[in-house]
Image (tube, rainbow, N blue to C red):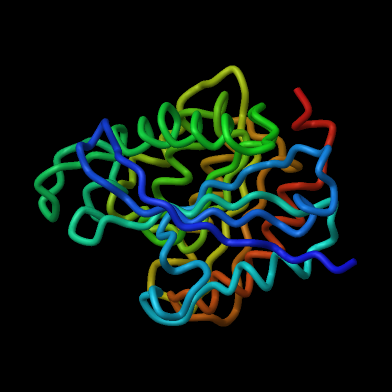
Length: 253
């Protein structure tokens, strides 16, 4: 019998921000093939760009097809959270004063994911709830917020995918605090995206290394080609999942 992933769309109220938001949940083929198993979860920002051309900003990431192509043992539940349109800039920005945004609501946004959305997902679906199996992933400002979450809340988000991060909006994100655990972090960008992306990625590598992150627990990938868009991010998604979901001893503690 052939199995394929299934996508479910549902609106949810964000109490911490007093707003409604659409979520897009992809249950992988393995979820149906192995009804006794529980699965890792990837919380992904800019959810409307992940699956469907009719809702995507440009081309979608094509994650339904990409998840179906992964071997069963690497398949994950994806929980895509749509961005808030006019609220995207404030929700994806760690709290600080910034001339471009009146409010920086990143902590409230993460509070919604951690204390509301995650609780519902874990209650209704067969999920692995530990930090090793709870991931966050985003691109551009979503990459900034994913890196911020993984380095500030690694006891919850044990892994992160960070694509083309907009660290210029909050350079302090690379001042990584000391934590009991370090997350496993995959960072990717292209030299063609912007004048400063290569330097940003190099700074990210050294910020993690100098903070004591083991090199088996972080990876910074600098691509020679690719624009700042969903085509690049979707193309690199599978490599991210394969690397994040490969166990290593250094991350086991």
